[in-house]
Image (cartoon, rainbow over all chains, first blue to last red; front, side, top):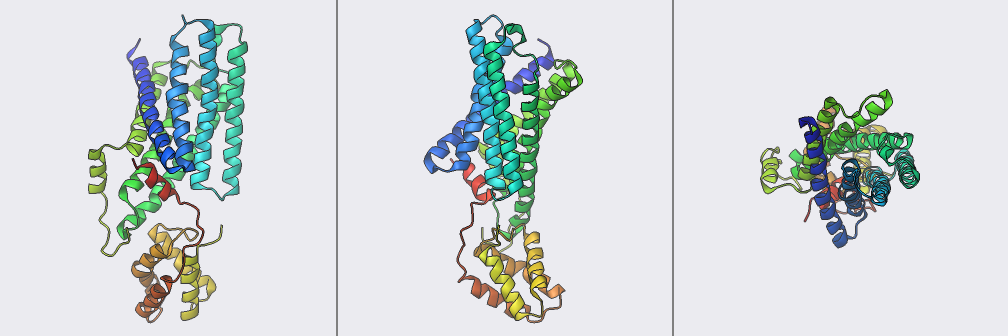
Length: 257
Length: 101
């Protein structure tokens, strides 16, 4: 295994660890609060990081595994990818634009794309004759990736827009710097998530090799950055919390926060 | 989505107690909100009170309105009686909770 492949693999493992930890934490929170946003994003992250990604890694690495295991792993991975990305679409719509018609249409369009792509992936995993083609690019897979790219870009734009609003509220004492930073980190999670899947889309559209050192470098660096941003957003260490608060502008006297 | 009760109250007070017409009064408050990073549809009476104390006087002064301090004090007093309407949960409330244990 080359250094670039190792970097890409490390980023996948980092996403599994950080996404599963954050997903579990938010699901635990949802159990207590019974609120929909944490249930949506907690389930989505957990499905993507703790189920789909490990199974995709398994199908990539486990060529010697029994056929039913390979088919089952790919089948569940396709299903959970579709469900996971659909959950993020729902979260972004529900939290940022619950009253906007265009956002509802965009979210449901994305969900249809992801669920249909996931269903096509499941069907393919169950019916494909030649198992060596299990990870070969498909049109349904490409459409799922397009949907995910649109999702990551939308999520990042909404998060950065809201961070800009909160930054203006901080000097008035109307916002918590840590919450503003959380929006920023969620935005960077989207940006680097977009970066980590773009090489696969580019390779499929251009007909090129998705396993070049350059692609592995981009996937590896973006995957690591995305995982770090996700972790800092929802499970920030005390030192990071202190740093954010220390570097925030001081509220003017008489603020409400 | 309709604008919040706090926004409507501040605008109606400006319209009633200054020479600003409805459009100018609403525009002035919207500019003050934009500078504060707040939105007309979700602002609460408590947040509007901070805007009225810290941002609105500057905006009104730049428009040549007289008696800004008294005007803002009367808006502040009235805001205490404005109830929070049925506002849907804001993104910052959600993200604040998501960071909790």
